[in-house]
Image (cartoon, rainbow, N blue to C red; front, side):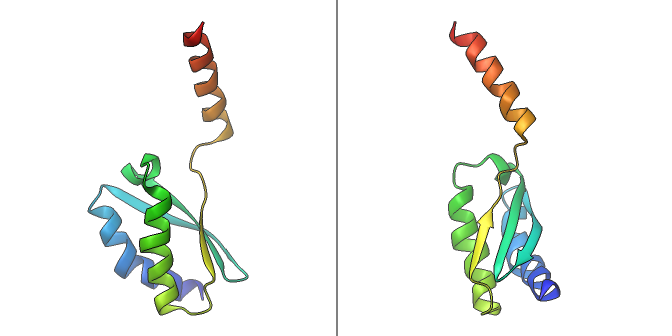
Length: 93
């Protein structure tokens, strides 16, 4: 199944994301759930959730009926989020 997923990603999803200066990484496939991370410009996009649902999930489900869902995994690490909170709290004072 992993090969099928990567084929769909390479042929249908990646060209779309590349057109927006983004990319995608498949993190895990388990029990019909595909976990992905968006990269490049797509990683911080406010529409990332909708891109995953409308482009990634629909493309995969269309080609691979065993796929139940695609989940977007946040690309920001805990350390990055903590640093951002520190900076924002400092500036709020």
